[in-house]
Structure formats: structure tokens, C-alpha cells
Image (tube, rainbow, N blue to C red; front, top):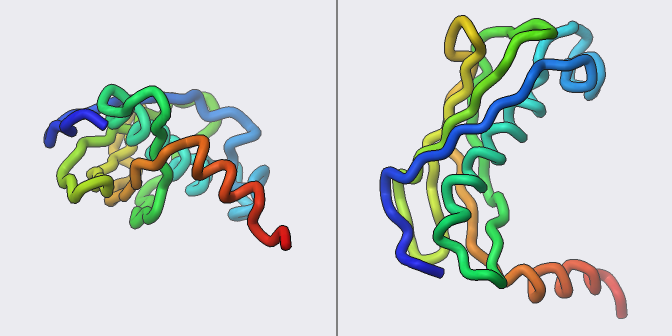
Length: 131
């Protein structure tokens, strides 16, 4: 792992399609961009922000996500998520995350990720529960 820079940012985006609606993912009954889809987009932005600092055998895993989804977005609009590295404690990285559509901010919060050895993490997970 390289030294991680506070203030590093990344932005990702997605088009709101029917598979990302609350009614489609089971998080509600309306045809609006779902909170789980917004959360996933925020995590994707955080992954992109920390990626330049990872060694070849490393990856990051999400360990907490605290967000508010404050306004709806309809099908067809584009949603952008931004992540900014705001704190580094060893292998634990904290991000400020925001999401906006083409009109207004739709969500914000904080997200933490932990840097792990990808192969070791996957191997340990794959053998979980095997005696």
C-alpha cells in the first residue's frame, strides 16, 4: 500500500434505469432511484478514489456506510457519486460521499473501507464454515 493522500477524490455516474428503481430492488414501491443503488454508487466512487494507492495484491472492502437519501430521482436521469478521502488510520480509510442527479444533491454521508490482501481475504471467506 502506498501512502494514501487525504483529499483524493473520484466521481462515478450511472443512468437511472428500471433495474435500479426502489420497486425493482425491493426497497420500496415507487419508480424512483433506490437507496441501495445510490449506496452502491457511493461505494464505487470510494473504491475508485483509493485504487491508485493499492498494491497489485490489495483491494478494499467496505466496513461501514452512513448515508441519507434526501430527494428522489426518476428513470432516465443521470446520478453522479463523489467520494473524498477525509481520514486514514493505517489500513482504514474514511470517505465523505455525496450523490447528485442532474438537478440537485440527492444524498450524502460517510463511508469506511479497509485495505486487505485480496487472495487471503477471499480464501478465508471461501472456507468460512467448513470444518
